[in-house]
Image (cartoon, rainbow, N blue to C red; front, side):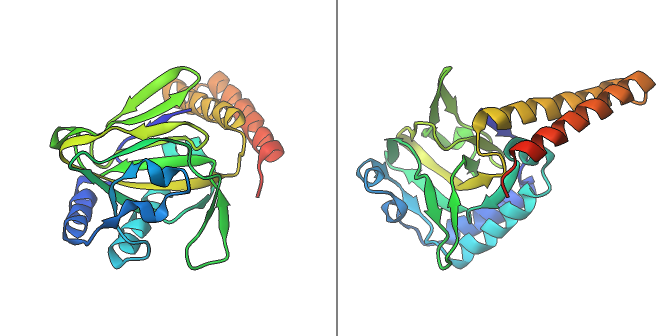
Length: 230
């Protein structure tokens, strides 16, 4: 399940973030690559734990906690502190799968990477290339979103970033451990939740609609109770 989440950050928040990112010092992005990924990764990255990364990471996590679409799609349990990368001058990231387990820097905590996220800080017309290509059972999906928008996809997916041939592509990327480990179960819960919301929005306070919504909400929570890992 690939979910595009619009307006994770407001235009004002993006402008604030871009100022910090433009003033920051970047390092070789291979510092966080795994054994195989390091061979195909060519980008820049903010140092983990830098003041800018921490400030913007906190902003992102706080905004996601208030985003109903994200909460419904991810059913998040743990969020890895957001990282930040920049692609320019032909930089790219070849086809790879994200590591299954990530150690949170400076702690003893680890997370299982069920979902991967990319949040864009540059608009598509600011650079050429740089599409995030995600493979699933339905083919290859090209993702290049407006700034402030985010894509969420299973970490089991093969994916790559195409070379950036003009301008700079600046994004945040991070991983999540969901309360629902299985992507199929998580997709079913998401579809059910979207259906319940649609009933409430389109049919309003009609008694029959309310009864259906209550019944489906009960099904949702009973499935969540059965499948959730805490």
